[in-house]
Length: 528
Image (cartoon, rainbow, N blue to C red):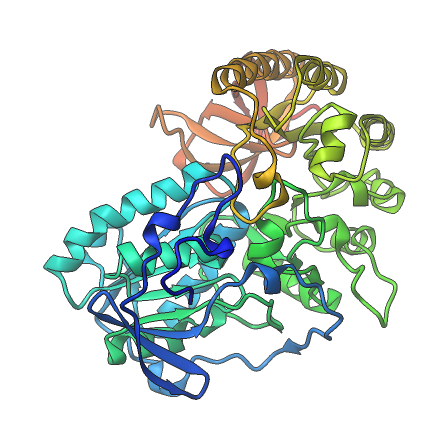
């Protein structure tokens, strides 16, 4: 814990980044006890038990320690009925990885006897599973904490926890200790399996319990999960070693470490037996899968080749890094079958100069060569991407390079963002010299182009018959059903509610910018 020096370099954000220094005044902190690696402080009138805390320097180290795989996870016996007649509520921010972490936490809580509740006012435990990718994601969480303070006052027995990527940030943890001391637990991304123990410690000690591992832990198999619907996410690896200059993920998720292929394959086979129709393989950089194995030569392409042999209709993956997208993977994706033709391939910028400042480790030309290879091998591929505008020093000419790349590739969709500095990243120390009005204008121009691309792509589908995984009623019209095609297109059509959860064929009759509409086709009449 940082104590009492607002000028400490550890507490300063880089230029343009949010400066949390005003929150750090722990001069009145007193050590209450130190035992078994745990230190208890008295801060702002409350005891704070620190088991471990985030440290950017530790988070950046990439040691050669062996990662062990553990198959013996169990809820502690004395916690198996701890949540009986109690309710939990989890709010999830951020990416699919966070959603999957939430499924794991739900699984553990329900094995402890807790039941899910939609109304957080009825909950006995509330967890905020947070995202640290962008500043506005953090602002949402702190805003939510402001609302939850009143609920905590009304229900003193409520257990309130902060977890996920924000918890891995030093400044965030210090801010919560100083300004939101009513929080009961803070834990990170590497020790989710410790949730039952942390609940017990926070409940019985009545202290704020902080346990954030800066160094990633081992791989814990057999964690319970509560999955809903007909689509499932499966982690195949954890962490990222790329250290793009703008990105906090290598600090919050740790170094790259892959699950054993036999464990991944067994999990997907079990999901197929349970009747799931679609599986998305997850990782911060799935293309790096297997590169950390020392005893076998087995890559992501090999894993996808094995996925083709499993009797499940659709296999997807998120997300990939262009640098690691190799020819073996392209060859396997070209085999088709149950492998989706939708490929999310983040480019971030169309300018080689900006890509170098971002430390993306590829050029514009290399990216376009990769796209050409994919289009040559995969039948009717649908490419989507991530793009940042207004990166420090980005010129108008460099932004035009991004627009021209978007036109050349023809992305169907893109997640587009205005650059915002993240504390602890190299880019946070760069001069954020692109005015906000310029960033906003560029974002608008980029989004207009993406919309144009999406509409052109959708228009090409008029008259086609596509297979749709029916997810439920349309959000805007309960008379319509909606689902996704294999290429990840959102499709609306009229049909019986009995079709929800099944794969059906739909003939496209109308197109919009972000979705397409069609008519349900009786299976006997399908002509593809």
